Image (cartoon, rainbow, N blue to C red; front, top):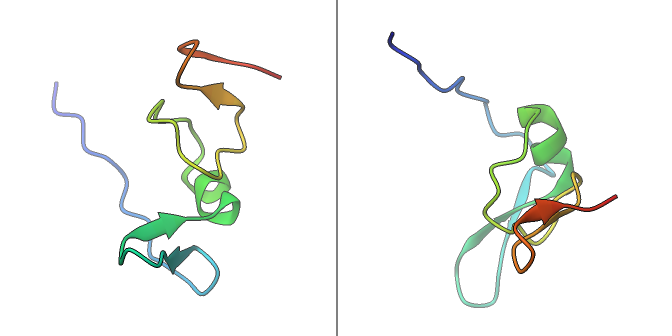
Length: 57
């Protein structure tokens, strides 16, 4: 099977640039994407905790 990730066009409010120069995705973007990537994102709306390796609600 060939699984391809759906490409989501970026819109205003989907991310901001951190002082270090990185793109940081917002809760708005994560909700549009529709799933948790389990990377411990700063604005994860799904409650994933990288330290415990599980979603917490």
